Image (cartoon, rainbow, N blue to C red; front, top):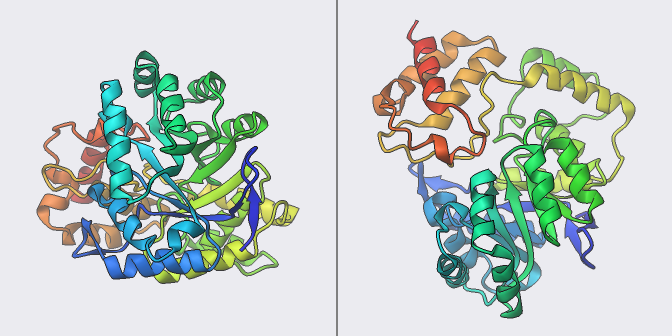
Length: 375
């Protein structure tokens, strides 16, 4: 495993971090984690040198932290630094902050959190934290020994990102960044801004919810085929990130042991400035072709839909139909979905849109998807 500088901390982080957000499940039920497989995956990653494990209150319908605690038993907790997040949308009072942190310590079966984040910061959540004097609370729980380092994950515009970075002496931050989403949210400018301020930058959605790891369109496959080194689509995306000195650790939400093994193998070969100019030019060409019409990362924050619509799956089929010029094939997959899971089953309740970190107009996009596959 390769290790990298983590901001101003006197500690080296593994190039690959384990994101406990897309663990294997049973019967396609996001809350029903396949415990045996998930624990095997996490422990295998740790045995291969991964020393950063990331979870959060809402992941897997509030079951991820509980699973991670089980995986870190038998001495594995001492081999990693653990990250989880304060659920910003739940915080209405100072007492709420204490309640959720204490509950997370209990669920994670630990006395302290190594890396604690204010989750999914946007303008509203940030203003609420300021009103509640978040910094005094942070200092309090630090003194109590409940958290070691403090940071935040971010889903809003660049100007707000810089404002937050400058507001406090953060240890680290977490941003969405990949070779397609360079100007999105904090983006590349945010990466440089935070790193120049001494923050460690943790990368989420490096594979854009798996979209950059699957078999690419034919013309993109031809682009990769022109490279000197044979890499999988996932490895191209990961190495592009590891190539950058400002990146501390890349989180991957892995769903199978095979994915863990593949990503560990890629991380073993990673290094700063390892990609050639030819490699970087090929990635530029691929990125021009790989952007789908809906910028969904399949994070699942919009789920579960109260009416049963599988929002990420519908958007994946819509994107694949366009990217691969395969409308009929993806229409057939759409029609094979149970009726309540199709985009056409949306009743426009609006519950999903406030939860979307990408601020997508989900209701409109579901209408577009339903219309597209109806003809």
